[in-house]
Image (cartoon, rainbow, N blue to C red; front, side, top):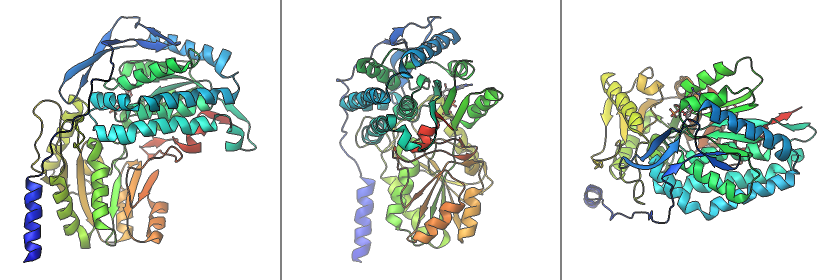
Amino acid sequence: MITFQLINMKKELNDNWDYSSSLEAINHIQLKKKYTLFIDGKWIAPSKNTYFKTINPANEETLAEIASASKEDVDLAVKAARKAYTNVWSKMPASERAKYIYRIARLMQERAREFAVIESLESGKTIRESRDVDIPLACNHFFYYAGWADKLDYAFPNRKIESLGVAGQIIPWNFPLLMAAWKIAPALAAGNTVVLKPAETTSLTALKLAEIIEESGLPPGVVNIVTGFGETGAAIVNHPDINKIAFTGSTAVGKIIQKALVGTSKKVTLELGGKSANIIFEDAPIDQAVEGIVNGIFFNQGHVCCAGSRLYVQEGIAEKVIKKLKQRMESLYVGDPLDKNTDIGAINSKEQLQTIEKYLKIGMDEGAEMYQPKCAIPKKGFYCAPTLFLNVAQSSIIAQEEIFGPVLTIQTFRTVDEVIQKANNSPFGLAAGVWTDKGSRIFNLTSKLRAGVIWANCYNKFDPTSPFGGYKESGFGREGGLHGLSAYLKLS
Ligand code: ADP
């Protein structure tokens, strides 16, 4: 009787769950109306004088105008990067290079709140994520790689170490500043110069980073930031004087890039899509696992290439896990990314929302059972309620293709061998999660799951010291840690 009353009380609490809004202030941030290109340490208007608008996906209002770099602009940036590499950066003592990278890290840290707000305004991710995860991690990447810059001989003992030259780097919209840090910091520490292109819907924090780079006194041309769409990216990929391409984005564009680079001497790393399995065994700590599932797919709107988008639950606990998961989903708050209570912010663009909605329809047409909590969704802006699909076949499109939204498919399994087969039955192999009480089982699975990163009893945990990257169509090469550094070096 008492238990029954408690359950009812909890249910009432959940039904009436509401917080007063707690909006992050935006009056301290400074955005220009129009952003030009950052080339050779100067702000340069695009040669064709073309600009595009970047909007806030939470309310569809314009934030700024961004320059669209042409092939000629990219050429200018590559020339500046080559000149800086040959004349300055490659000749500078490594300990001096390190000082600049430390300085960038410290300046970023000082302006962390401003970066977090701009990141949330433009990408739609919650302020909680950008403030507590993205920006601190981005700073940490600069700190971490600054530490290696003058210790390359210790990082790779008994090897001949040479930098590569000019690195062309193309990044996506899901972790705009963090991806820029993942790319720029190891490239600089290894002694290379950089031409970086942010994604067209999220250019602002990369441009703010350019302001910090300017302030840090980094020699002109060492880092160049060119903004624009796919053609700008393609101009970087196809430029003959680039030595290394680092790309993070969709598998489709990754394949185009790989084809374009065949027969060239350019070194390449590709970090592409994912459809990662989150596996819950009967002996798992269920409440923590449910929180891990939510963290793995719903926080950050599912805009994570390693999102735990396929859930595999051992049969004996499936009913319990699904019930708890639905309860937890009822309390998720979808709304303004700048509200500190928000769990699920805005989808990054209208196009991405349409893609997610297309998959929701496919899931229902395939006969899966869809569940969405009764959460309020703002009328303006691009939002998607957290979604579960039950009764999903392994071969169904929603279990095989990357959706890149807060959408989770759920399947059950009985044995370890069965779940290994199911988890590996995917064109992707970026990440996986394993929830169990048994260390031996974790080690067994980590050696058999074809995924670049495997989290045990947690999900989506990142650290600059640990490598990240995929198998199969999730790409190749590693970023982070020493592996990430070696990707910017010629080691012999
Ligand atoms: P997503 O689906 O995550 O947006 P994309 O692969 O479309 O991923 O975009 C990732 C990055 O690649 C963006 O900066 C985008 O502008 C760039 N890009 C798109 N098409 C090309 C291309 N053909 N060559 C090089 N870069 C491209």
